[in-house]
Length: 111
Image (cartoon, rainbow, N blue to C red; front, side, top):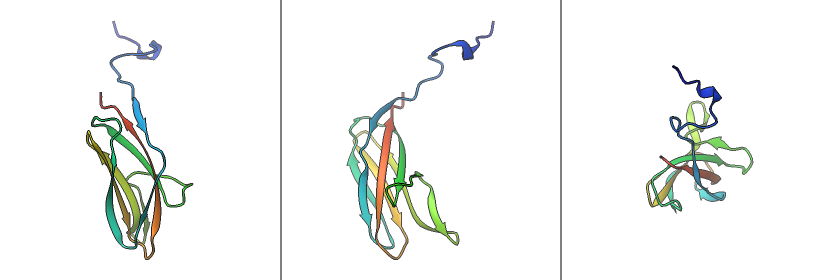
């Protein structure tokens, strides 16, 4: 007898995504032609999956690892990862001027 999972409200066969921490909007200024990694305390205290969004105008957000490019050259980008104590935020600015990055992230439990 096959189980029809579409008729179940919940099943332990499919672990639910659990957001365990949501950050406030963080702002970082990054100088021209600079790549840097900023650190923030991991408020969850355990290793987690990170979902990060970034913006350079505070309104239009991009997913982590996306790039803004001109003629196949990355102009700016942001990425993130974490361990049990620290969240790492990688910022890259290859433009001729200083950029302000607006960062928002959530941590999801692994189990």
